[in-house]
Image 1 (cartoon, rainbow, N blue to C red):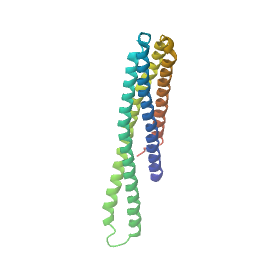
Image 2 (image 1 turned 90 degrees about the vertical axis):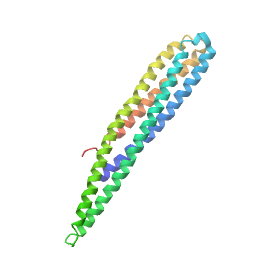
Image 3 (image 1 turned 30 degrees about the horizontal axis):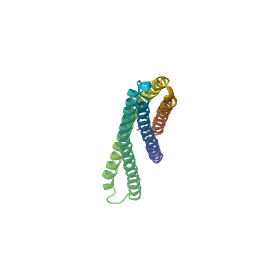
Image 4 (image 1 turned 120 degrees about the vertical axis):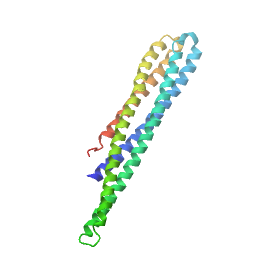
Length: 204
């Protein structure tokens, strides 16, 4: 049971790391889209006057997402270390138990009891800390959803402003589409991260 649990934790943490890496790349793409939109809006002048402040919002959302993902990566790395430690202590428990069984009736067999209890206690504490960190990570993942939702709203406003940009219409609409698509990808990736956490057996 404990072995399967540890495997689930490793799989979950690995999955989260992969999805977060993808989110980071998408956030960088949003930042690039903001820079492109700013350049287009500058060339369009009065025709895209309403689009210019939107580019700043897009860039800020990208920065916020990158900052949040960097923070979440720290949590994910901490989860990985906790999983490694728990795995090691679980293996230590097994070895102590095996030695204890072999030492039944031996003169100093009781001397193993205290060490075994200590290792078991450390394993339990490590797992409880893992559960706590999973809860914290779920909150952080929820935070990433906020800029993704905001980006979709901004993308909708961008389409409206782009419609008034004359010959720059298609270029600015392409920016709006890229932001909207990026926001949807981030949303999907975050949901996958949350799903990865649900496979962990956090039962005490």
